[in-house]
Length: 370
Ligand code: RB5
Image 1 (cartoon, protein in one colour):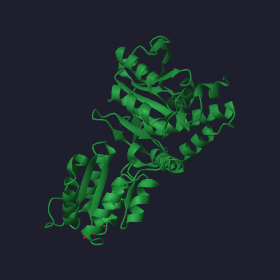
Image 2: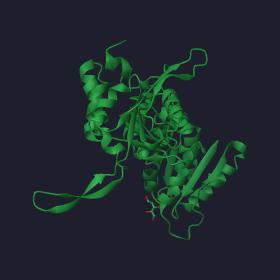
Image 3: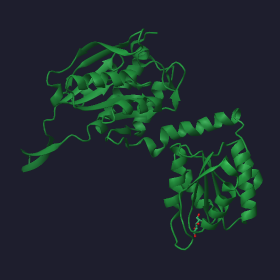
Image 4: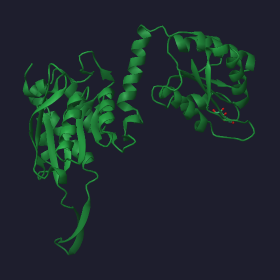
């Protein structure tokens, strides 16, 4: 079991004692010490706590144990990191319960609160306990779901190749997405909502369009104003659900050209095959927005963008309404250079590849099919 340790100057001595205590238990624990490395110099606990908490988040450690004067600062820090459930414990009971009921993956203790003897016992208790699942699992899912929808992590998350995931969580967008999720929303209302959300997203997806100054005359005098500098845009809906977003976008950028790409899944290879593709001739000169309401497994978005790149598309963004973390990951694995704009990120996919809680099949809901 890999344990990440971190402390500030106040927690340093206790960290060293706990490290020794764990290391004397043979091969049971592999200790990853993220510092600090002395009690002499006053340091800031976030600088060390984030390192250990991120080690857990990134899968480099199974658990983190964090030390500062009270444990409070370290617990606040760790709980800012996505997926971390840090428990501040100063007694055996809370230590045990934080594992059994909360599946805590980080423990914070205060060196100015506890003696090292009891701190060792608390650490041992905490490491020995197991999560009880059941009703407690459902509660943790609610926390994860909140994190996926609201945590800052997804905002402008960037791959090493610069592809960002931008969550457009404007209150109007959130409100309309909520209406779309409702199974009682009619096809007509659903269609309207898809257009409206796609239109609202234009505000963000066009943020990087360049401007130039021109001279005009107001009714009072000549002045210089900013105008879009003739950037050429293309909207490429992935058939068929992507069609639902086109009009909403065109209302705001009426000069954009519209291409189309249709894909189906080959029943033998299970790979997406494009059965239709018609793009503007000058596609390589255009800023391309590939639109598809749902980024679920990522298969069709990956294939659509691969195809557009193959025929010369260079500056491409993917615009979706709902995404699953699995789809984002897969898409950025293959296209780390492409921005993803999405109105929401749901917690996960179900066994059938549907986004959960999602909104069902966007194509069916748009066109009233089943
Ligand atoms: C450092 O003096 C102290 O503030 C810090 O270790 C911790 O207790 C903060 O929560």
